[in-house]
Image (cartoon, rainbow, N blue to C red; front, side, top):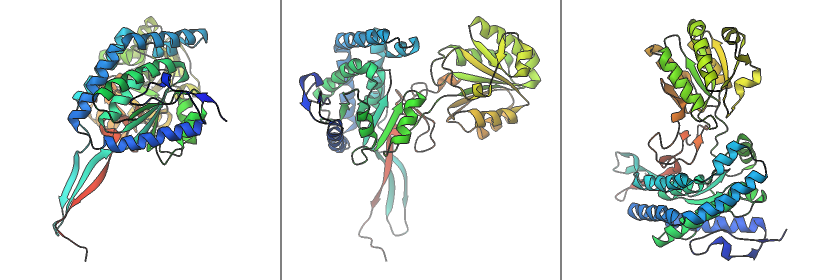
Amino acid sequence: MQFVMKTCINNSTKMSEINISESITEQITAIGQRARTASRALAGISTEKKNNILLSMADSLERNRKTISDANKQDVADADKQDLAPALIDRLLLTDSRINSMAAGIRDVAALPDPVGRILGTHTKANGLEIQKRAVPIGVIGMIYESRPNVTADAAALCLKSSNAIILRGGSEALRSNRAIADALVEGGRGAGLPEHSLQLVPMRDRLAVKALITMQKYVDLIIPRGGEGLIRAVAENATVPVLKHYKGVCHIYVDGGADLKKALSILENAKCQRPGVCNAAETLLVDRAIADSWVPVMAALLSERSVELRGDQQAQSLAQNILPATEEDWYTEYLDLILAVRIVDGIEQAVEHINHYGSGHSDAIVTENPEHQNYFTRMVDSAAVYVNASTRFTDGAEFGMGAEIGISTDRLHARGPVGLEELTTYKYVVFGNGQIRE
C-alpha cells in the first residue's frame, strides 16, 4: 500500500516540512535504522554534554509554549467532538502548569546522576584478570503510549540521559500535541549537540505502524507500552521485540487488627480519593475481622462523604448500609474511578492470599503497628511496591527520587516498579588483563 505521509522528525527537519510517498513498513524501518545509528553516537557522549542537551530541551519547551498550547487545543477540541471520557480529556489537556512541569521534569532528570558507566561489581582473579560489570545503555527504545502528551517529554529525557535513542509513538488523539512537543525538544537538543535522530516520533495514526515497530528486532531493543490494559496486552501478544509491561493497577489496602485506625482512615482516603483515575490508586480494601465491626461503619461514612461507591462481601454489607454487593469480578477490577471493593478477612494470611490471587503485582499496603505482621506482609506479598503504613499513591518515579519515570513495570524482568534511569540500562563485562592466556 502506497500513500503520502509526513515522515519522522529528526534533528534538522520538522515533520511539517516533508512529504514523501512510501509504505508504512518502509517508513518505520527507516526510523529504526536511524535510531540504531544514533544510539551508537549517544553511547559516546559525556555526562556534561547530555545534561546541557536536556537543559536546552527544557528551555525550548518554554520558548515554544504557545505552539504547543495551540496544538493541544486542537487535539482537545477533537476529543470533545468524539465524546471521549472526561478522564481521558483531562489526561490529554496541557495547561500552562503542565507545560511548566514538563520542563521542570527534564531539568530534574539533568540533575540526576548519570546511570551509564556505573561499576556494578568488580573482582580480580588469581591470574590477575580484573573483571568489571559495567552499566551501559540498552540501545534503542520504542515507547507506545496513549493520551498523555507529557509522556513525550518524560520518555525523551529519561532515554537520552541514559544514552538510549528513543522512538515515540503516541496516541492518535494527541498527535498534534506530541508533534509540537517533539519538535521543540529536537530544536533545543540540536542546539546543544544532540546526535541526529536520537529522538524520533512516529507521525502516522495507522496501527500498522505499531505492528512494524514492535516486530523490528534488528533495530529496536525494547518496547515500553504505557496506557490501558488493552493496549499493553495487544503489544505484548504481538511483539517480537522484548516488552516491559504494566498491565493494570489493582492495588490493595489491608487494615490489620493491630492498626492505628485513625492512620488507616487517612491512608485509605488518600489512596482512593486523591486521584482515583491513576494506576497506583487503591481499588480493594481488606479489613481484619477483629476490628471490622467498629471500623467499617466509620470508614463507610467517611468515603460516602467523598462520593465513593462501596462494593463489599456479605460481612461488609452487614456493617454499613451504603455498601453494595460485590461480585467475583470486582476483586479483579481496576476501577480508575471513585469505586472501592471491600472484603472482611480472617487475619493477615488470608489478606496476603487474596492480594496474591486477585492483585496485579503493582502496589499493596498494610496498615499495622505489629512488627511481625509488617515483616510477614512485606515478605509474602508479591508486588512491585509493598507499603507499611503509607499510601499506595507514592508508587511514582518522582516520589521515589528518580525524577521523571517512563512507566511502572509489573514484570519481574528486567525492571520492576517505577522505571527510571537505572532501569533503562543493561550491563556488559569489561575485563582488564596484562597478557594472560587461558591454559
